[in-house]
Image (tube, rainbow, N blue to C red; front, top):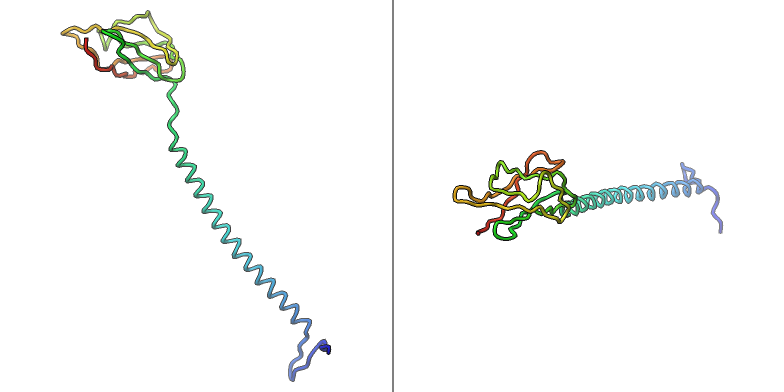
Amino acid sequence: MTLPASCTVPGMAIDLGDAATWTGVLLSVGFSSAALVVSIHSLRHARRSADAAERQAIAAEKALPPPPPAVAWQIVHVGRSRFAMYNTGTEPATGVEIDTERATNVVLEHDGKARVSPGAALTFLIAVTMGNPAPQELWVTWDGQPEPVAVPVPPWRL
């Protein structure tokens, strides 16, 4: 049995070819709408993932220790009145001077401005008298650091 190309309903004519076309159009619109909803959902999820990755990268960057300074100082008591000021930085320091006007009882073991490589030390003496106690800090300058920097002197006894 074959269906006729068109059926006649009293007061209305239906063409079966049109029904299949409209069904295809409606299905296409439905699938396209569903694909749009899935795409929007995926876009939102991708944005959240990107934001989370950015927050994680910022947190990881903050957790990293700061890089060591190019020039840094640490004074160590070597024995009796002798001290060593080590360059604990990563670069050599040139033109190093200890301000002996602020610490008058410091006796330097070098003349003029010194060069101190990383890990190396500049040695000096601190002459302590009853009227001139040991300083608690020394003020140091070097090339590239014209403003004096306070370096703590460790506590010690003769």
